[in-house]
Image (cartoon, rainbow, N blue to C red; front, side, top):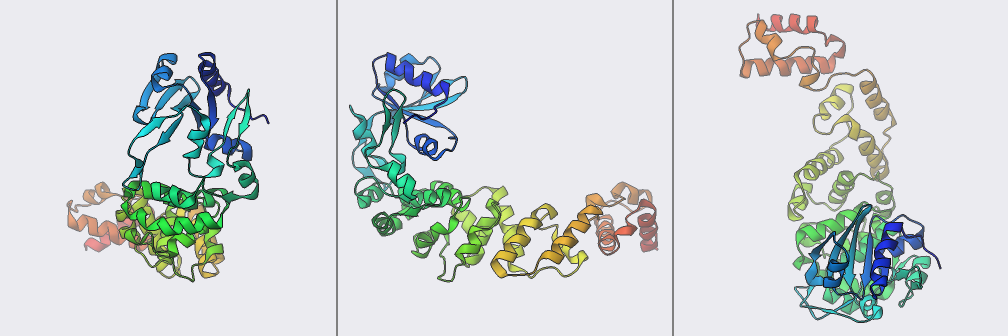
Length: 393
């Protein structure tokens, strides 16, 4: 079997091979190439010790030297090169107590999480698939390498990774692997919130986020406030627009959780939190009934986000949203104002009328905005100044 590795990856592997070491492309890049998908990055595993890798590549950095990983900087990209290794007992349900370098590729592949991630490829040797990962890839199955319980006991984050890969690839999780994952899922509470969040968000953004449901119903993510009810609408959820804030907000809403608390528990960034909160609020509130009410909502959720919101409400609540979509389009086509910066006058115009800066001026601007929300055709400098003068008298 021939897989098309980029020339710079082949050059990296050739350098290692010419120095007398084995070198294999490994993990996700091999999985993706077999699926006909362009990998985002490339990992290489080698028999060369980290010191030899550093010696062979002048532009390399010991980014994970304690785990045998060296980042080799090539002109076309960075390749993570890791020495064959085995791992001792794990501590804290996440990391091995120590790493031992191995002599054979088989030992390195045997420590990996799932069969579809435990394949290696070298142009001169072909595909090395000790655990039938290619067959699982064809069948669309996530299956643990070796004894599933041991894999999840070692590293609790692998539990969430199983569901993440199932979502991203639209695969099922093999029954024994699924049972073991759910048995050890409680240990996710001991994993850093940032790592849990990264895997959960990638799962939510996947092709089939409903693959998360067994995990969400197990109570394993109760520590961050997410528990899915039995009535969770799996099929509509899978067809939500691929907007991460919207999908996160929808998950919170459907699970009866508050986006604010979930985002805080997962230590998510402020930008994502604010967007998720805005979507969640618009999922909880009834739809606006008039153009004015719709424009008032734009201050919470901007107009460009309403297409995804209305699609979500149509899927989740079976609501007829086409009239509101048409109204939203019309408001944007006419460029009807909905925020202060879109008014035809500003604070300096009102000060020229003798209105002092401060609370009174701010209140008058808000009053003018309320007027043009109802009468967008009045948003001209002349009309608003006349209204402002009348308000002062």
